[in-house]
Length: 359
Image 1 (tube, one colour):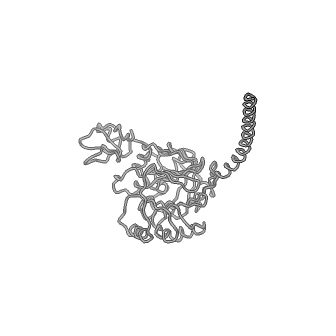
Image 2: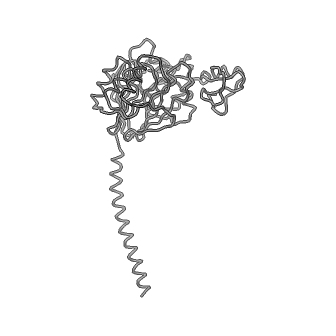
Image 3: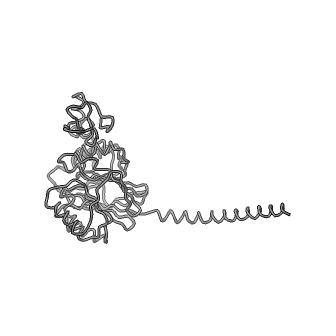
């Protein structure tokens, strides 16, 4: 009797497991379809045409972020654009560095829209526009979040990671203190480097963060000191955007355009197309504008583009040391002297094995 009971229990258990298994398979199939549609999201990156300045609006799943806020005379342009996009709140306002062409309209943005978090470069500037910005932040009872390299944040279904600044010892060049970040939506990725120039880019490359990105916003409006061969080699972008307007600086430089052509990077310019919108589905990126014609650009990189050669990367030495270092190296103590890799080598210095500068 006990044997029959045991057999009955065993058969009952097998039957239950079979029925549950069938149910699980059915539910999983339905959930898989639902999950795929729910995680598939469209993200838009608006490279706002603000002339010779930067302002980028990013939208993901009803959440918004603004990277930089143009120049002082761009107030109406930027505020009205955000209103037209029906922005009510910015989850993040990121101000890459304290030059007027990046923070000019920030006070008006803060006064007009609800702000979740303000992330600002820790480098200050003794200008009226910067002081007004600090006053506006205080008036609205907001706090400033200091950027920490490696920190990640979510924006809707997208995510971004901070890549710079890596040092507070770049001297008086405010561009090098720019916040840099990599934005990811599904399999699509975007890189923003502010106005970082040679020295800061060298530190970004040495920091071993993921840089590979589909879209690069060329730093400093296409300046040759920002879009370097070394950077393009690590980022391997398919597309590049240049935010630029009428200027007397020669932006974008022929060296930059030459590098973009040489690397077959499809390039878009706000001075040619106005505001450019990149739409990411998570697996495909499309642009609202027509790519610039690079056919007349000389594809051979000019010898003037010293930033494509690591020999010209800026490093630091000390009078009593035998190594050359990155600016952020912990071994740099006391008086230090700025030089280049080439000059340091010529003077008998070797690369530091701790900070691993360009060699």
